[in-house]
Image (tube, rainbow, N blue to C red; front, side, top):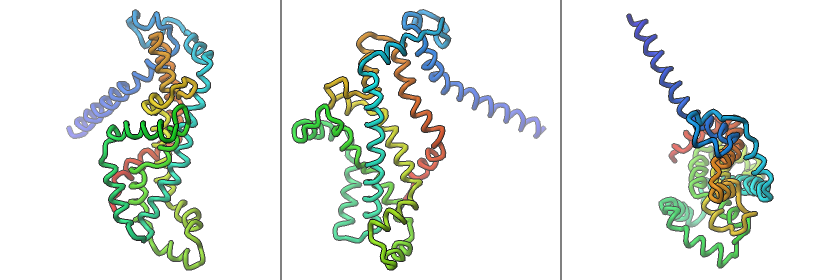
Length: 276
């Protein structure tokens, strides 16, 4: 009896998992098939996940657009540069706040914590005024790359992780004549590669899909990224097939990143629970 019940429970368990998996996979299937569908055939047909015929016009129209390659290039610039600069600065600041004793360190840390409590919408208008009137960052990569150089939440994450590192290693390095920067780059940085990788992955995801800052700071369509560029194309002609194509193109790098770095996604969830 128990064996039958356990098998029945296992069937229910796996059936539920398969159903939920199909529910999550179904939109991606629609997205891919829709990118190979003519817009005129998407809405009328009943089986909208199966194209009536393979249509390459969406891809031809997209890549024949003189701005399309610029959007692809801009997407990688907006995503990769903050990964490099942000992970370095956030790691360095987190390490300093955790391991360096200086006057005002606790006050500075509390100031960072208080900034985390401020909704991003509150600072949207002041940031816009500052970047457009003071620094003249309109239609400039700097409007996206400068704010991407730091993240209060990532600084907090690195600070909490750095507090778990033994002081004896740092003290031994200093006794051996190692300077602060050498200690950080050669000893500390390799020890924190897991949270650094997590920060880099989530920074890439955030800036690859960035939308609002690009929309408000970039007046030149040549400075758009894929997210904004494809969105404007869809708004102009209401091409659902083009919209599906844009979603596919935006999804491909994220999918590749997840395939090769999925263990860091799991570790990232656990790292967000670190407590000092």
